[in-house]
Length: 181
Ligand SMILES: [Zn+2]
Ligand SMILES: [Zn+2]
Image 1: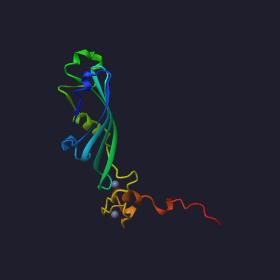
Image 2 (image 1 turned 180 degrees about the horizontal axis):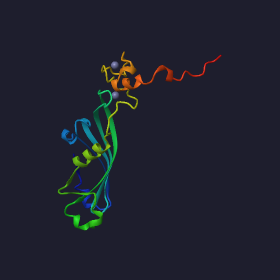
Image 3 (image 1 turned 135 degrees about the vertical axis):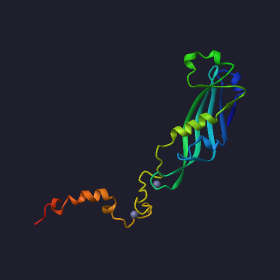
């Protein structure tokens, strides 16, 4: 995705609205983190603030995730704030070194956006995707999707290590509670 800045580049103080849309190479994302579905959009404004072009707007993309609990795929539409600064390579000498941090340089009449858009999306991805906050996951024993209904596995026979422990807890140690008379 590229932004044509041929006119704006010459007009200090000017500002334009823009909209770009396109495909990002799928390899920008780790397939385990998510995969892009369809085109990615960026819309907003680009301002010439004297040698530096400030591109500000929102990235919109649909990403398919695999739920880390129930392993089902689910898609989510992302709308992410985007703000980046670009400086034409011929103007870099006008930008003091202390102001160059985070400024991307470009040559020619267009600004390439793919890399910064991909970064914006990747930084927003969750460490563990969940199809919904209260996803119940799958039963570790029989694999039943617990969102669709419970299985017949009893909670007290899940882990043999816990079963060993329960041998030491005889019925006499259970608190019978106070009975009403
Ligand atoms: Zn889930
Ligand atoms: Zn089960």
